Amino acid sequence: IMSAREIHRALYTDNIYRLILETAVSVTSAQRGCFLRSVDGRVEVAAAIDVHPAVGDRPSPFMSAIAERVRTRGTPMRWAERAPAFELDTASGDVFTNGLATPVLLHGRVDGVILVLDRVRNAFDANDEDNLLVLGGEAAVAIQNARLRDEIHGAFVTTLALLADLVEAKDPYTRGHCERVSRYARATARRLKLSDAQQQVACYAALLHDIGKIGISDDILNKAGPLTPQERARMQDHVRIGNALLGKVPILRDVADVVLRHHEWYDGRGYPDGVAGDAIPIEARVVSVVDAYCAMIDERSYKEPFTEEDARAELHRWAGTQFDPRVVEAALEAIDAVDGGSTDIGECGPLPSILARRLIEMASPP
Image 1 (spheres, rainbow, N blue to C red):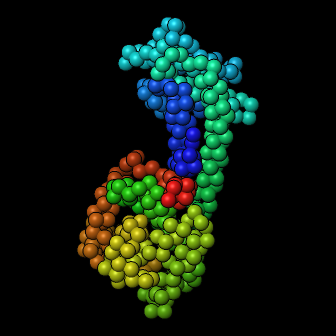
Image 2: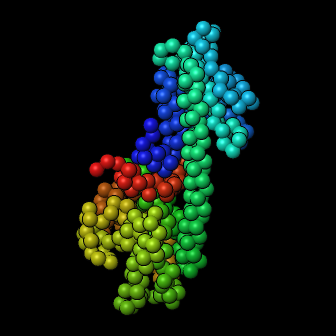
Image 3: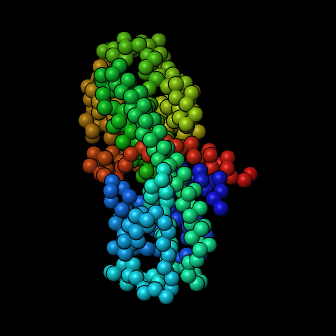
Protein backbone atom coordinates (compact mmCIF):
# COMPACT_ATOMS: atom_id res chain seq x y z
CA ILE A 1 0.00 0.00 0.00
CA MET A 2 1.37 3.42 -0.94
CA SER A 3 1.52 5.71 2.09
CA ALA A 4 0.83 9.45 1.87
CA ARG A 5 4.53 10.07 2.45
CA GLU A 6 5.49 7.82 -0.49
CA ILE A 7 2.96 9.45 -2.79
CA HIS A 8 4.20 12.94 -1.97
CA ARG A 9 7.82 11.89 -2.40
CA ALA A 10 7.09 10.29 -5.77
CA LEU A 11 5.02 13.15 -7.16
CA TYR A 12 7.49 15.84 -6.15
CA THR A 13 10.85 14.16 -6.70
CA ASP A 14 10.40 12.44 -10.08
CA ASN A 15 10.37 8.87 -8.68
CA ILE A 16 6.83 8.02 -9.74
CA TYR A 17 7.78 5.28 -12.23
CA ARG A 18 10.18 3.70 -9.77
CA LEU A 19 7.55 3.69 -7.03
CA ILE A 20 4.97 2.06 -9.34
CA LEU A 21 7.45 -0.62 -10.37
CA GLU A 22 8.54 -1.32 -6.78
CA THR A 23 4.88 -1.77 -5.83
CA ALA A 24 4.26 -4.09 -8.80
CA VAL A 25 7.26 -6.27 -7.91
CA SER A 26 6.18 -6.42 -4.27
CA VAL A 27 2.51 -7.32 -4.80
CA THR A 28 3.34 -10.07 -7.31
CA SER A 29 6.35 -11.53 -5.42
CA ALA A 30 8.49 -10.95 -8.50
CA GLN A 31 12.27 -10.69 -8.31
CA ARG A 32 12.74 -7.99 -10.90
CA GLY A 33 10.99 -5.97 -13.56
CA CYS A 34 10.80 -2.78 -15.58
CA PHE A 35 8.38 -0.05 -16.56
CA LEU A 36 8.30 0.70 -20.28
CA ARG A 37 6.84 3.87 -21.75
CA SER A 38 6.66 5.52 -25.14
CA VAL A 39 8.57 8.80 -25.54
CA ASP A 40 8.28 10.59 -28.88
CA GLY A 41 7.24 7.34 -30.54
CA ARG A 42 10.18 5.42 -29.06
CA VAL A 43 9.80 2.76 -26.33
CA GLU A 44 12.24 3.29 -23.48
CA VAL A 45 12.84 2.06 -19.92
CA ALA A 46 11.30 4.45 -17.37
CA ALA A 47 12.26 2.36 -14.31
CA ALA A 48 14.18 -0.88 -13.81
CA ILE A 49 14.86 -3.31 -10.97
CA ASP A 50 17.61 -5.90 -11.45
CA VAL A 51 17.49 -5.81 -15.23
CA HIS A 52 20.21 -4.51 -17.49
CA PRO A 53 18.51 -2.00 -19.76
CA ALA A 54 19.11 1.24 -17.86
CA VAL A 55 16.58 4.03 -17.41
CA GLY A 56 16.31 5.95 -20.67
CA ASP A 57 17.62 3.03 -22.77
CA ARG A 58 15.72 0.98 -25.29
CA PRO A 59 14.50 -2.34 -23.85
CA SER A 60 15.79 -5.68 -25.11
CA PRO A 61 14.20 -7.05 -28.30
CA PHE A 62 12.17 -9.54 -26.27
CA MET A 63 10.86 -6.86 -23.89
CA SER A 64 10.04 -4.65 -26.88
CA ALA A 65 8.08 -7.50 -28.46
CA ILE A 66 6.14 -8.08 -25.22
CA ALA A 67 5.39 -4.36 -24.89
CA GLU A 68 4.20 -4.14 -28.50
CA ARG A 69 1.88 -7.12 -28.05
CA VAL A 70 0.39 -5.68 -24.84
CA ARG A 71 0.09 -2.23 -26.40
CA THR A 72 -1.62 -3.57 -29.52
CA ARG A 73 -4.09 -5.81 -27.69
CA GLY A 74 -4.57 -3.62 -24.63
CA THR A 75 -4.67 -6.70 -22.41
CA PRO A 76 -2.21 -8.40 -20.01
CA MET A 77 0.13 -11.18 -21.08
CA ARG A 78 1.77 -13.81 -18.89
CA TRP A 79 3.94 -16.80 -19.57
CA ALA A 80 4.61 -19.76 -17.32
CA GLU A 81 7.69 -21.53 -16.03
CA ARG A 82 7.19 -24.32 -18.56
CA ALA A 83 7.81 -21.90 -21.42
CA PRO A 84 11.34 -21.73 -22.90
CA ALA A 85 13.80 -19.41 -21.17
CA PHE A 86 14.14 -16.02 -22.82
CA GLU A 87 17.35 -14.05 -23.01
CA LEU A 88 17.11 -10.82 -21.07
CA ASP A 89 20.51 -9.49 -22.02
CA THR A 90 22.71 -11.49 -24.38
CA ALA A 91 25.88 -9.75 -23.22
CA SER A 92 25.31 -10.52 -19.53
CA GLY A 93 23.80 -13.98 -19.98
CA ASP A 94 20.85 -13.16 -17.71
CA VAL A 95 17.65 -15.07 -18.42
CA PHE A 96 14.14 -15.23 -17.00
CA THR A 97 11.60 -18.01 -17.31
CA ASN A 98 8.28 -16.50 -16.31
CA GLY A 99 6.74 -13.08 -16.40
CA LEU A 100 3.68 -10.89 -16.49
CA ALA A 101 3.11 -7.74 -18.54
CA THR A 102 0.20 -5.37 -17.90
CA PRO A 103 -0.89 -2.24 -19.77
CA VAL A 104 -1.19 1.16 -18.09
CA LEU A 105 -4.24 2.76 -19.71
CA LEU A 106 -4.54 6.54 -19.86
CA HIS A 107 -7.61 8.05 -21.55
CA GLY A 108 -8.40 4.74 -23.19
CA ARG A 109 -4.98 4.11 -24.70
CA VAL A 110 -1.94 2.20 -23.54
CA ASP A 111 0.48 4.74 -22.08
CA GLY A 112 2.98 2.26 -20.63
CA VAL A 113 3.64 -1.37 -19.78
CA ILE A 114 4.51 -2.83 -16.37
CA LEU A 115 6.69 -5.92 -16.76
CA VAL A 116 7.39 -8.16 -13.72
CA LEU A 117 9.75 -11.13 -14.00
CA ASP A 118 10.78 -14.30 -12.18
CA ARG A 119 8.16 -14.86 -9.50
CA VAL A 120 9.78 -16.11 -6.28
CA ARG A 121 7.62 -19.26 -6.12
CA ASN A 122 5.48 -20.78 -8.87
CA ALA A 123 4.32 -18.88 -11.93
CA PHE A 124 2.34 -15.67 -12.09
CA ASP A 125 -1.38 -16.37 -11.84
CA ALA A 126 -4.73 -14.68 -12.48
CA ASN A 127 -4.63 -13.04 -9.05
CA ASP A 128 -1.29 -11.38 -9.91
CA GLU A 129 -2.81 -10.24 -13.17
CA ASP A 130 -5.80 -8.69 -11.41
CA ASN A 131 -3.53 -6.94 -8.89
CA LEU A 132 -1.42 -5.42 -11.66
CA LEU A 133 -4.50 -4.29 -13.59
CA VAL A 134 -5.68 -2.42 -10.49
CA LEU A 135 -2.20 -0.99 -9.96
CA GLY A 136 -2.08 0.03 -13.62
CA GLY A 137 -5.25 2.05 -13.16
CA GLU A 138 -3.84 3.80 -10.09
CA ALA A 139 -0.52 4.31 -11.87
CA ALA A 140 -2.25 6.05 -14.78
CA VAL A 141 -3.75 8.62 -12.40
CA ALA A 142 -0.40 9.18 -10.68
CA ILE A 143 1.42 9.55 -14.01
CA GLN A 144 -1.14 12.03 -15.27
CA ASN A 145 -0.77 14.06 -12.07
CA ALA A 146 3.03 14.01 -12.46
CA ARG A 147 2.71 15.31 -16.02
CA LEU A 148 0.34 18.05 -14.93
CA ARG A 149 2.89 18.94 -12.25
CA ASP A 150 5.58 19.24 -14.91
CA GLU A 151 3.36 21.48 -17.03
CA ILE A 152 2.59 23.70 -14.03
CA HIS A 153 6.28 23.81 -13.14
CA GLY A 154 7.16 24.85 -16.69
CA ALA A 155 4.65 27.69 -16.58
CA PHE A 156 5.89 28.68 -13.13
CA VAL A 157 9.53 28.79 -14.20
CA THR A 158 8.56 30.90 -17.21
CA THR A 159 6.84 33.34 -14.85
CA LEU A 160 9.94 33.51 -12.64
CA ALA A 161 12.10 34.18 -15.68
CA LEU A 162 9.78 37.02 -16.67
CA LEU A 163 10.15 38.50 -13.17
CA ALA A 164 13.93 38.35 -13.49
CA ASP A 165 13.66 39.98 -16.93
CA LEU A 166 11.66 42.82 -15.39
CA VAL A 167 14.61 43.65 -13.13
CA GLU A 168 17.06 43.53 -16.02
CA ALA A 169 14.83 45.72 -18.16
CA LYS A 170 14.78 48.28 -15.33
CA ASP A 171 18.55 48.17 -14.75
CA PRO A 172 20.53 47.64 -18.01
CA TYR A 173 23.70 47.00 -16.02
CA THR A 174 22.24 43.76 -14.62
CA ARG A 175 21.57 42.27 -18.08
CA GLY A 176 22.40 38.56 -17.78
CA HIS A 177 23.57 39.05 -14.18
CA CYS A 178 20.78 37.08 -12.48
CA GLU A 179 21.09 34.06 -14.77
CA ARG A 180 24.87 33.96 -14.30
CA VAL A 181 24.51 34.21 -10.51
CA SER A 182 21.97 31.38 -10.66
CA ARG A 183 24.32 29.09 -12.61
CA TYR A 184 27.16 29.75 -10.16
CA ALA A 185 24.85 29.32 -7.16
CA ARG A 186 23.53 25.89 -8.13
CA ALA A 187 27.04 24.68 -8.96
CA THR A 188 28.30 25.96 -5.59
CA ALA A 189 25.41 24.37 -3.68
CA ARG A 190 26.17 21.06 -5.36
CA ARG A 191 29.83 21.24 -4.36
CA LEU A 192 28.78 21.94 -0.79
CA LYS A 193 26.67 18.75 -0.99
CA LEU A 194 23.51 20.57 0.04
CA SER A 195 20.22 18.68 -0.19
CA ASP A 196 18.24 18.76 -3.43
CA ALA A 197 15.73 21.16 -1.88
CA GLN A 198 18.52 23.48 -0.66
CA GLN A 199 20.14 23.44 -4.10
CA GLN A 200 16.82 24.44 -5.64
CA VAL A 201 16.30 27.22 -3.09
CA ALA A 202 19.80 28.58 -3.76
CA CYS A 203 19.27 28.40 -7.50
CA TYR A 204 15.93 30.21 -7.56
CA ALA A 205 16.95 32.72 -4.90
CA ALA A 206 19.99 33.59 -7.02
CA LEU A 207 17.77 34.05 -10.06
CA LEU A 208 15.41 36.33 -8.13
CA HIS A 209 17.77 37.95 -5.61
CA ASP A 210 17.35 41.41 -7.16
CA ILE A 211 13.58 41.24 -7.72
CA GLY A 212 13.07 43.88 -5.02
CA LYS A 213 14.77 46.46 -7.24
CA ILE A 214 11.41 46.73 -8.99
CA GLY A 215 10.51 49.00 -6.07
CA ILE A 216 13.62 51.19 -6.34
CA SER A 217 13.57 54.32 -8.50
CA ASP A 218 15.57 54.37 -11.73
CA ASP A 219 17.40 57.49 -10.55
CA ILE A 220 18.98 55.49 -7.73
CA LEU A 221 19.55 52.30 -9.73
CA ASN A 222 21.30 54.07 -12.59
CA LYS A 223 23.06 56.87 -10.71
CA ALA A 224 26.54 57.37 -12.10
CA GLY A 225 28.14 58.59 -8.88
CA PRO A 226 28.18 57.43 -5.27
CA LEU A 227 24.86 57.14 -3.46
CA THR A 228 23.98 59.47 -0.60
CA PRO A 229 23.28 57.84 2.79
CA GLN A 230 19.56 58.23 2.14
CA GLU A 231 19.84 56.71 -1.34
CA ARG A 232 21.95 53.87 0.00
CA ALA A 233 19.33 53.11 2.65
CA ARG A 234 16.65 53.09 -0.01
CA MET A 235 18.73 50.77 -2.21
CA GLN A 236 19.16 48.39 0.70
CA ASP A 237 15.39 48.18 0.98
CA HIS A 238 15.38 45.98 -2.13
CA VAL A 239 15.96 42.89 0.02
CA ARG A 240 12.86 43.60 2.11
CA ILE A 241 10.81 44.44 -0.97
CA GLY A 242 11.91 41.20 -2.65
CA ASN A 243 11.16 39.22 0.49
CA ALA A 244 7.68 40.73 0.73
CA LEU A 245 6.90 40.05 -2.94
CA LEU A 246 8.10 36.43 -2.99
CA GLY A 247 6.81 35.65 0.49
CA LYS A 248 3.24 35.98 -0.75
CA VAL A 249 3.71 32.78 -2.76
CA PRO A 250 3.74 29.77 -0.36
CA ILE A 251 6.09 27.68 -2.50
CA LEU A 252 8.60 30.57 -2.57
CA ARG A 253 8.80 31.30 1.15
CA ASP A 254 12.20 29.59 1.55
CA VAL A 255 13.41 31.51 -1.52
CA ALA A 256 12.05 34.74 -0.01
CA ASP A 257 14.03 34.13 3.20
CA VAL A 258 17.24 33.79 1.19
CA VAL A 259 16.51 36.95 -0.80
CA LEU A 260 16.10 38.79 2.52
CA ARG A 261 19.44 37.53 3.87
CA HIS A 262 21.76 37.51 0.85
CA HIS A 263 23.39 40.82 1.89
CA GLU A 264 24.03 39.77 5.50
CA TRP A 265 27.72 39.45 6.36
CA TYR A 266 29.29 36.40 7.94
CA ASP A 267 30.63 38.61 10.76
CA GLY A 268 27.24 40.26 11.37
CA ARG A 269 27.94 43.64 9.77
CA GLY A 270 25.59 43.25 6.82
CA TYR A 271 21.99 44.24 6.25
CA PRO A 272 19.07 44.31 6.84
CA ASP A 273 19.33 42.86 10.37
CA GLY A 274 22.99 42.15 11.12
CA VAL A 275 22.51 38.38 11.26
CA ALA A 276 25.82 36.48 11.49
CA GLY A 277 27.45 33.10 10.90
CA ASP A 278 25.32 29.97 10.68
CA ALA A 279 22.22 32.01 11.55
CA ILE A 280 22.35 33.15 7.93
CA PRO A 281 20.74 30.42 5.76
CA ILE A 282 23.42 28.49 3.90
CA GLU A 283 21.65 29.22 0.62
CA ALA A 284 21.92 32.96 1.37
CA ARG A 285 25.63 32.58 2.10
CA VAL A 286 26.01 30.92 -1.32
CA VAL A 287 24.11 33.69 -3.13
CA SER A 288 26.11 36.33 -1.25
CA VAL A 289 29.44 35.04 -2.57
CA VAL A 290 28.47 34.42 -6.19
CA ASP A 291 26.47 37.67 -6.40
CA ALA A 292 29.46 39.65 -5.13
CA TYR A 293 31.78 37.96 -7.63
CA CYS A 294 29.44 38.70 -10.55
CA ALA A 295 28.90 42.29 -9.37
CA MET A 296 32.66 42.83 -9.29
CA ILE A 297 33.30 41.56 -12.83
CA ASP A 298 30.24 43.39 -14.23
CA GLU A 299 30.40 46.94 -15.54
CA ARG A 300 28.15 49.21 -13.49
CA SER A 301 27.08 52.84 -13.86
CA TYR A 302 29.37 53.76 -10.97
CA LYS A 303 32.42 51.55 -11.64
CA GLU A 304 34.57 49.74 -14.16
CA PRO A 305 34.61 45.93 -14.10
CA PHE A 306 37.19 44.04 -12.03
CA THR A 307 39.36 41.44 -13.71
CA GLU A 308 38.48 37.87 -12.75
CA GLU A 309 41.79 37.59 -10.88
CA ASP A 310 41.06 40.71 -8.84
CA ALA A 311 37.52 39.54 -8.09
CA ARG A 312 38.80 36.18 -6.86
CA ALA A 313 41.37 37.95 -4.68
CA GLU A 314 38.61 40.07 -3.14
CA LEU A 315 36.60 36.98 -2.24
CA HIS A 316 39.65 35.54 -0.48
CA ARG A 317 40.29 38.88 1.22
CA TRP A 318 36.80 39.09 2.68
CA ALA A 319 36.44 35.40 3.57
CA GLY A 320 35.63 35.17 7.26
CA THR A 321 34.28 38.72 7.44
CA GLN A 322 31.76 39.32 4.66
CA PHE A 323 31.72 35.74 3.37
CA ASP A 324 31.62 32.21 4.76
CA PRO A 325 35.15 30.88 4.00
CA ARG A 326 33.86 27.39 3.17
CA VAL A 327 31.42 28.85 0.64
CA VAL A 328 34.15 30.99 -0.95
CA GLU A 329 36.28 27.91 -1.70
CA ALA A 330 33.31 25.98 -3.10
CA ALA A 331 32.19 28.97 -5.17
CA LEU A 332 35.59 29.47 -6.77
CA GLU A 333 35.66 25.81 -7.79
CA ALA A 334 32.11 26.14 -9.12
CA ILE A 335 32.96 29.27 -11.11
CA ASP A 336 35.89 27.45 -12.73
CA ALA A 337 33.61 24.52 -13.63
CA VAL A 338 30.84 26.70 -15.10
CA ASP A 339 33.24 28.94 -17.01
CA GLY A 340 35.02 25.82 -18.23
CA GLY A 341 31.83 24.67 -19.92
CA SER A 342 30.82 21.95 -17.45
CA THR A 343 27.64 20.17 -18.55
CA ASP A 344 27.10 18.72 -15.07
CA ILE A 345 25.41 21.83 -13.67
CA GLY A 346 21.83 21.11 -14.70
CA GLU A 347 18.79 23.30 -14.22
CA CYS A 348 17.33 24.63 -10.99
CA GLY A 349 15.03 21.60 -10.76
CA PRO A 350 11.31 21.43 -10.08
CA LEU A 351 10.28 23.91 -7.43
CA PRO A 352 7.59 21.51 -6.12
CA SER A 353 10.44 19.60 -4.49
CA ILE A 354 10.77 22.51 -2.07
CA LEU A 355 7.10 22.19 -1.18
CA ALA A 356 7.47 18.41 -0.97
CA ARG A 357 9.72 18.78 2.06
CA ARG A 358 6.80 20.23 3.98
CA LEU A 359 4.27 17.79 2.51
CA ILE A 360 6.40 14.80 3.48
CA GLU A 361 6.79 16.16 7.00
CA MET A 362 3.02 16.62 7.24
CA ALA A 363 2.40 13.08 6.02
CA SER A 364 4.90 11.55 8.45
CA PRO A 365 3.80 10.30 11.87
CA PRO A 366 4.82 12.55 14.79
